[in-house]
Length: 440
Ligand code: URA
Image (cartoon, rainbow, N blue to C red; front, side, top):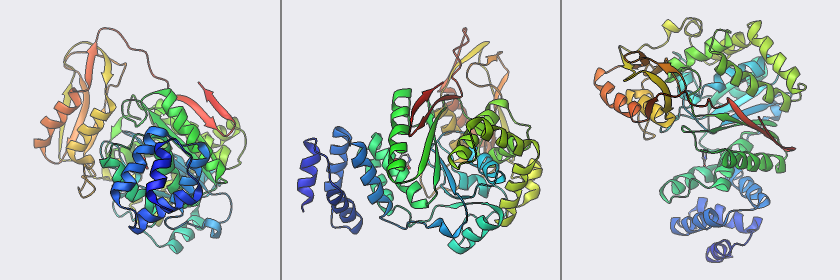
């Protein structure tokens, strides 16, 4: 077999076989297929696309390029979730304790933030003392004991994806649905859970900017999971507004704990309940209505918050900081960003809000950057809200006041105040399962 022929076949619109995909991906990981040939293949895939079956096979080959975690040492159904990324997206910290409090095991690997999107592991590490690395034995033991563990993704998961993603990043081939779907799902398949809920975000802060693309990505990921023997559903959620009001690691922990304690903004709580309910349905806990009631009950009776405290305690985290946000890292300086005029917020670009938060120290632009757990933004007004000139729209938090001007300029570059109230985006656009697409 020759890489040249595989590239030519895809260039001409052919469908690659398992043997050809194994040759290309295996060779790339082993170093026998050079970057220039893999780049050509990626571009051919970008331009020609892939069939569902081809994408499912590619994903399986990518998943098997590293460790396949065997969760059979953990009793019962194991559920996982994944978000395609956003700003203020703290749902993992909320819904995994809810689901675990309902008796479903969650053995989850999460990532760190990069660019304008945050990562669960950085958020967890904002809680003093929290460990996000452990051995597989410790990981399994914790899940068997308390039903929940969230740790950093091992470097040995879907090794091909790491190499391919870095190449896609520099060859203009990131924005290709079969490549995104296979990249995400290879890691999810390798992580070993039976039931996988995907949160596909859509809007100015997300990878997907319109509903047809978001539905198609969701459909492809559900098809991949189903073809590989997993129960998978996807919820398409709005990212034209950040989720909740807090952006930044410690700030997001505080807001997540508020959801678990039943004292958070209604929109954030609603999205979390819907995601948790869908995860519970996949885990076989009942109908959507029954699972929604189960999820709500864990907030009302305090069991979800208690489960979250158990997880942090097991991972060395200071539970007192979960109970009292004043004990989380606090920034030394704050700055109020005010409205320039009376009117409505008709545009508040979420990527710009995320970038402003990164420039305050809450995120990283390169993998090597360190983050400031206390830095971030608290939004007081969001897309669609009425504002008065001089009123505070957001409070910036940072350890260095010299960071405020750039953050302000970045934030304002995506902000438009106008006379008319814009149409509000819905919280949830659609639900995609193996049975089809339901739009709301
Ligand atoms: N997230 C991933 O893990 N991979 C992609 O290709 C895009 C988003």
